[in-house]
Structures are given as C-alpha cells and as structure tokens.
Length: 178
Ligand SMILES: NC(=O)c1ccc[n+]([C@@H]2O[C@H](COP(=O)([O-])OP(=O)(O)OC[C@H]3O[C@@H](n4cnc5c(N)ncnc54)[C@H](OP(=O)(O)O)[C@@H]3O)[C@@H](O)[C@H]2O)c1
Image (cartoon, rainbow, N blue to C red; front, side, top):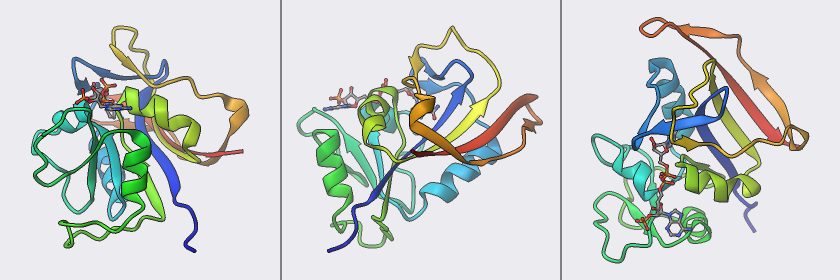
C-alpha cells in the first residue's frame, strides 16, 4: 500500500501572521513566487474558492488545482472541485482524471490557502513552508492561525533577505511537526 501523503502548507506571513487584505495577498516578492512554484510544481495543490479567484490568469499551470467550494455547478475549467477539505485531500491522493498532461506526485499535497483552509488544514499538516516578512500588518483582514511552537521544529531556515523593489526583509522557514 502506498505511504500516506505528506500534507504541507505553504504561506507568506508577516510577523503578526497577516496573509491577505481585500481578497488579495499583501505582498508579491519575486523570489518567493519562484520558491512557491518550485515547491508546488508537480504536486497537487488544494485551495479555497476565494484564493483560486484571486489568481489573475486562472489555474496555476503544471499542477493540479483542487478548489474547495460549497457552490454547486461552480465552473471547473482547468480545476478540480471538492466540497470539503477531507474530500479535496482524498481527491489529491488519487490519480488525476481529465488533467492527464499534468504530472501529479501525490506523495506530498500542498495546501496553498486561504485562511479558512489553512485553519482546517493546520492540524493535519506535517510540514509548513513559511515566508516570514519582517513587518506587522494589523490593518490586514486575513490571518494565518497561531502556530504553536511546541508542536513544530525548524527544519530549514534561510538568512534574512531583502526584496529590492520594496525593501522588505523576509526569510524562508520550513517547519516540521514534532
Ligand atoms: N499570504 C499567503 O500566502 C496567502 C495564500 C493564499 C491566500 N491568501 C489570502 O487569503 C485570502 C483568502 O482567504 P479566505 O479565508 O478569505 O478564503 P479561502 O480559504 O481562499 O476560500 C474560502 C472559500 O473556500 C470554500 N471553503 C473553504 N472551506 C470549506 C469547507 N469546509 N466546505 C466547503 N467550502 C469550503 C468556500 O467557498 P464557497 O464560498 O464557494 O463555498 C469558502 O468561501 C485572500 O486575501 C488571499 O489573498 C494569502
């Protein structure tokens, strides 16, 4: 029997756990977008309907886009629909249908947001790919749930980096569940 998939979460957060405002992300840092692409490429991605609708060019190419929605008849071009997170994870663990050109390595399923899906997925996740942006954004309207440090260990940590266009300082952290 194949091993159970690893459930990972990827998120860009500020020091105060902010992740979004007005339906959009707070920041777009080019090297972080490249890291996101490299981590998710080839793996099924699970997301909430609002996060999917924030993509300017529709489904992200080269990966299965599994979208959670309660809306019957939601347009499904280029995406797969699931009515709940457990259904999305079960779907992600199976071979894709209708998207055969997409390589799908289900050994790792990556949950890509937003807040409502992160809240549901955090207890199930065993790996967190964080981009921590060294600012506070109390004005944000969407936040990642608190990360209990007693439950996670730092597996990898980058040095702080600066995003030249914005001057923002950020770093990458990979946490694994203890
Ligand atoms: N910083 C980051 O890394 C990052 C990453 C991703 C997203 N974000 C931000 O997060 C915000 C979006 O987060 P959000 O919490 O508002 O929305 P979301 O989690 O992306 O999507 C919420 C929607 O997903 C569906 N859904 C979620 N759980 C469900 C369940 N158990 N059963 C059925 N449907 C379910 C529902 O869709 P229906 O209403 O269709 O039923 C719900 O309205 C945006 O600002 C986005 O930019 C930030």
